[in-house]
Image 1 (cartoon, rainbow, N blue to C red):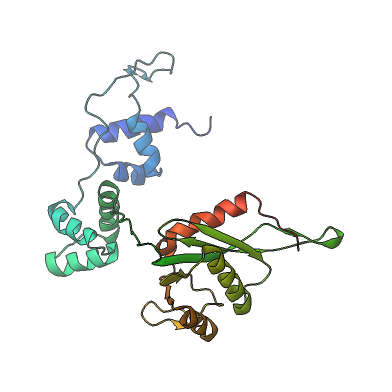
Image 2: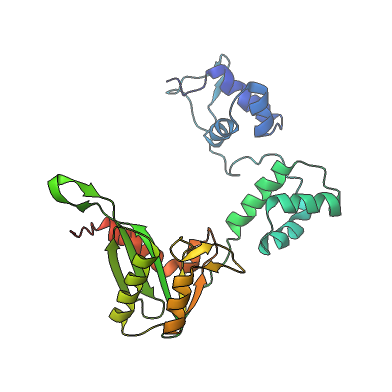
Length: 267
């Protein structure tokens, strides 16, 4: 039972808490983890006899009706409305802390602001907007790691899957390949367009090298072969923002589905 605190430590925790000490201060004073102190304070307090704490089978739990004890009041409380407004516009905890120091003369630490912002984000989650598309407006595509491909003499080779999804109808097309070079990508893209029976207006894709030579949210450097291909078919390339796969969320789940279901063609 090495994970159970000794009776003397339990007595010290409850004694200091009765004196109004915060969980953080108790943990620092006794050399314990703050979460450990909080866990024992949330439990029913053991009964106390003249010889100290009774044994577990003798203890009579005292049920609190006031809920878990509150810790030290955050110094961010007086500026709660200001902090919430900054969180809603997407500012980071670091930026909010800097603004509070400059605008309000905030004297507490950055860690206190970070904890307060974390609680606000948990209680006020950011709204997720559903993006709707018109028929034939957008095609999302992405390369994903496929299942191993069986070859001769029992050898296997890694495969890649190009997944294409029409944003309006969710109609999809998948093709497994061994390479991600530009020529292979354009061949798969053309096969997918033939399968759909037409071309969309926008081509929403990731910033992989076969399509985008230099990723940039404002001025991406599109591969010249892809640019000529899209110009021929009347399409416009719209790479998603680097590190933001949710910009093409309609195709992301399809990659994981194909991989988990063992797409395993033979070449």
